[in-house]
Length: 466
Ligand SMILES: Cc1cc2nc3c(=O)[nH]c(=O)nc-3n(C[C@H](O)[C@H](O)[C@H](O)COP(=O)(O)OP(=O)(O)OC[C@H]3O[C@@H](n4cnc5c(N)ncnc54)[C@H](O)[C@@H]3O)c2cc1C
Image (cartoon, rainbow, N blue to C red; front, side, top):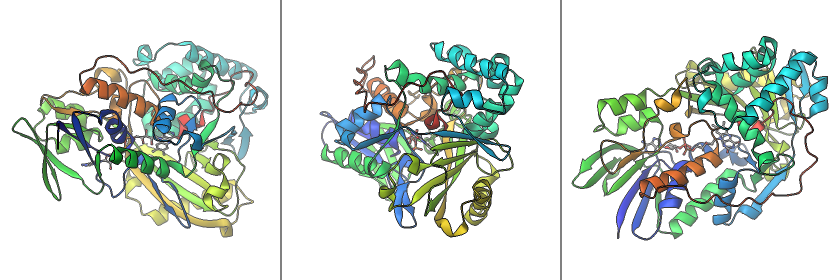
């Protein structure tokens, strides 16, 4: 090994993107990932006869950082784009919510409520940053602007779809970031937002990114859970099941409580800041079908008797030929990391989800189901509570050379791969002591998109729900 040796703990998109930024002359980089595959939340798995993303992922035209990374690894020309539709399911009925006309026809809300909803979205999109909203509970802000009825009919199901019970704790900056992501494409001069995917899915992105890292000398080890990081001379001893390796610098990208556990020499205060982060998790049933449902990428489910908060019909974006002619549907339920749902057996979760899916779509028959599988992740994102940015653990620790860089530090932004890569770029500059941000990659507007959406309907940002 030559130059400074760096270890990145965690081989999710953040760890891999950091390695992509840090690899270069004067540094040797090793990524250690606990699970048997690299990719973290963005990895792929097998569902019956097909292999696709364990959790649903789409890319937006405005995802400039992700598209920059795809260009670096030779996959940008593999992006495929689609304009998709969104439904809102309440009272046993599907309500399309795609444009101003759908919005005007939307029966659960009267005209005044609709006008207040539109005004809330426009107002939110005009605010430059969400920090000032951090002190206001999201429910208070939305009720004040949109009215109680609009909150109960639209905003509450939308917040529940993404945050489950944690929606009671978050600040208004969360919804600001959702509105903001929705408007990013238009700010970038595009007429409308489209959803995209890379042919072969995220499994292919992770595989190509890993191959590119290895070509550049980065060692990427899966199945290598780090159990402890301790000072060792001028550097650190990193323990895994297979032994102890020594590095000059270590960057831990794993969620807060896990980071505190593997870094026993941090101060009590540092550990408290990490363990004090509250996480949102997800339990998501994937269903492979012989036929599609309604061809909507996202259906918000505003019915609390249904055990999932949305129906994501992936094949509304992804060509069915990628999935052997099948339709792929995800049924997520967002819950706090400590929710008892994580302990329920797969069979019970699947049975509940399928019963309700058949009830929602009466044309669908049990025979149409090819395969089901349950994915769980306890640490999807840190819940951005009131005044969150004041309590975020810093990257630098009391142990010079040991840094904590994880998604809890992505503040006032919607959590997604694009934000993760942007954050990796900022973090890498900080870690190597280069102040300032790297230049933003230029954005190709992508395929000619459809007509502009005339007026803002409700927030129908399917990827933000993702
Ligand atoms: C249901 C769902 C839908 C999503 N939809 C979209 C979407 O449509 N578009 C989009 O852009 N983004 C989407 N995302 C978000 C995206 O997947 C994440 O933002 C991104 O993958 C986070 O990467 P990360 O590296 O920060 O975290 P993670 O992927 O969680 O990576 C952390 C890694 O650390 C590893 N680790 C933990 N402990 C140890 C240890 N002791 N030693 C070594 N390794 C360890 C873990 O195994 C894991 O691989 C979605 C996420 C979910 C869950």
